[in-house]
Image 1 (tube, rainbow, N blue to C red):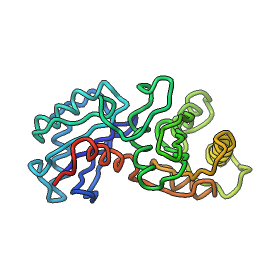
Image 2 (tube, one colour; image 1 turned 90 degrees about the vertical axis):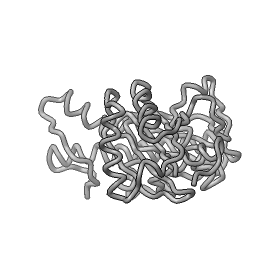
Image 3 (cartoon, rainbow, N blue to C red; image 1 turned 180 degrees about the vertical axis):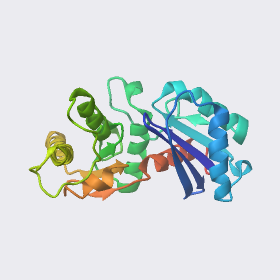
Image 4 (tube, rainbow, N blue to C red; image 1 turned 45 degrees about the vertical axis):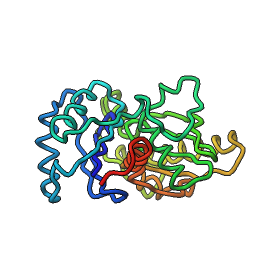
Length: 258
């Protein structure tokens, strides 16, 4: 079985694959100083609830945008799963070209999203990932990573609004029934929700116009379903895109796990 770890700025996802099948996955808040032992206590207990043992893991792969946490994630794999993890960005064959001036600057999560999206959908794509940042990544017809756009994430924008304006409260993200808010909270919810819908539609339209050829739009990340319901621009929701990309990269470099 394969342990796939996607360490983002806000959350870290641990997933177990049995061959092609995604058995289970768990999400924890990212903490760069969390030790391998702390990871293991949490993860092995959750695995046990699914009748999984650490002895069943025979491979591991990590994608992280938090370099400070990589040491402990490596140690977790070595000490508790007795395997040396692959790390995206450390000389792995992704099976795609990265057409950027500085390919090493592209986040590992964005690259594995491109791998999985091309394998699943083909064609030219815009991949929107609703994470700490909201990213728009462009993949061409042959699977090459062309580039993209990085915008502030939804929760990051909400927190900045609350911190910078003394009278504005923290609010939950939801889809308001009306654009014109009748109070402070509803006005903020409208600004965030419909404002980001406008951002999505505007950027996708400009990306498609600049690319000059038909493109499909895929969305992933925790808030993707909420925002996909507000626009026809998003054609496909794919919650497991990043994790599947890690599986595909591992198989390309090592081969299938049991």
